[in-house]
Image 1: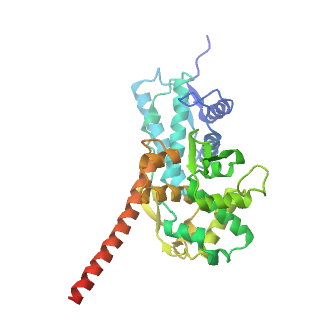
Image 2: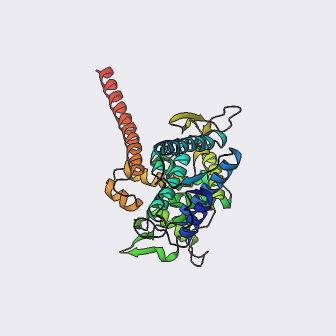
Image 3: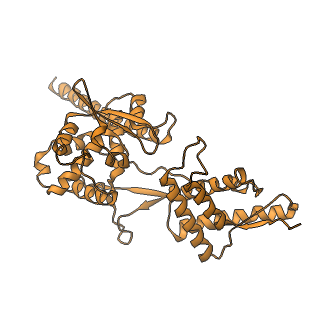
Length: 360
């Protein structure tokens, strides 16, 4: 009778796992197919593991643990502890990644180990449960209602933009009204526009969450739709890839004078590190440098919250789950904005009191 294999190379198993994910043989817990973005991330993780194994000369394998002695079991536990420290060290120190990215890769790796145990019946132990998943709260950059108002209504500033930048600005402003993810925004078709009782809505199903969203459009967003209604057969907005859009948004923000210095930090191993636009000269970021396509969705959500919309209604529009940690970061950020505005009101009230006392 042939002897059972007690050790397997990890990377061939990982490739088989990715193939099963692509074919829909391995599904999410809810029975749905794993999304293409997650499949791409598994591909990135495979490449990282390959590079790590070669550059650090670390043979990555899994071992069947059912017949291990106590000493062999302890050795195996140490092996996986060493792997975790070496691999995360490679991601942090050699590649310069931060907590969020490292955490995402480790989370995917843990999912792979669960697949080997639960779906392939491989008794490889539960050492992966000790793989800590780091996370961080990345700075939220949003366009304030005052700045959004300038983007919408200032003809003088808009005249400084060429025709291409005006199109980018229209897409950005529209995105700040509807709170959609950029992929969903660029996928909008004329069939997503609904008119009910003279009110215009965008109705869309999110690619990421499959949640349906219906958002009533303000007048300025309706004006943008009308501007492009005859230019495209089915699309409702100009189409730009994300890299191009991110580049041009920064130009627009700088043109509008949104260029004050801001401090930015990212975390490695839970320790905040200052971020610089130019690390050599330690030149800080400006507000315009930090604005991206993500800013549209964040700005829409924060504006709704800061101007008093009920949290549950905002969640319904944004598609966030009721317990979403990400969503409550917006709530906290909006509360800070509200507090600042209230402080300004109080300051004005105090100055009026002092003026009155001076007259008396």
